Amino acid sequence: MAEAIAAANPGLPANAVRVTVNERGWLDELWLCLDKRFAYTRCEAGSGGVADTATVKVWRGKR
Image (cartoon, rainbow, N blue to C red):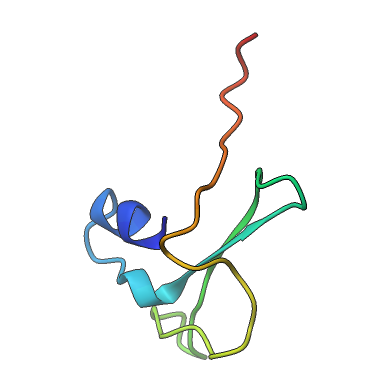
């Protein structure tokens, strides 16, 4: 999922994106990891998030 987000946002490295989901696999949060100068930086190991190969459900607001 982080790779797809980075591909759609030039300049955003995939390793600076952390994706979290709820217990049912629905998208919960997207985190952008930044350094003290607000530049993208690699998210810290062990800081949570799903594997890039995980299936993530995204609600699009239609019924």
